[in-house]
Image (cartoon, rainbow, N blue to C red; front, side, top):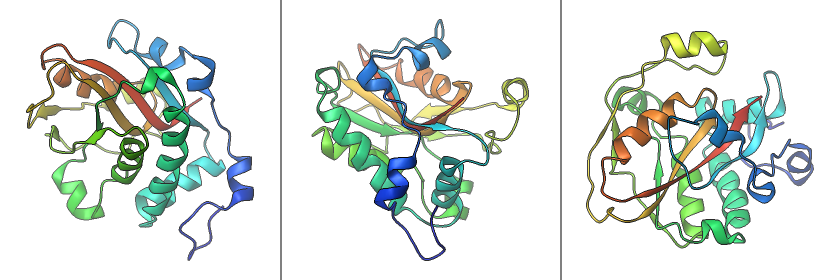
Length: 207
């Protein structure tokens, strides 16, 4: 999809990407994945993820080839769509799922950051990357089967700052949702904050 020196999504490529339209269709797909584990107000993903697909290549370039602009483009795309919907206009704060400090040092950036920043800008919400910290490094889980992801994934996060978060509508943002383990682990921390409302948005969801 992207050449080695290309850091944006061309118009023709964008038209070929498998959009979910979850937020337009009031889809409950993500809520069902997290049913009984996380209480969500809204939940959406921009794209469907399949192995050896354009979306896989896109996210690979974002995460491992320093194409951070992809996160910007996807964030502008989803942010604009969410800004047209009443159910997302009440969002006060956008929080990206953090990387462990060792992975952040190796990669040099959190691949979710620019995506989350653009969504926050579109929703006129506050962007906060000082709320959560990841306390245990984990290996990439996307290419494992669903059962092995449950067995091998031990996501551990902690709250770093809760200032001015009480009674707020928070949008938790990640790159891809599979079993929902990462979202659940982050949500368990966020729900320690008094009277928050939680929504979720990701770049993609595995089919």
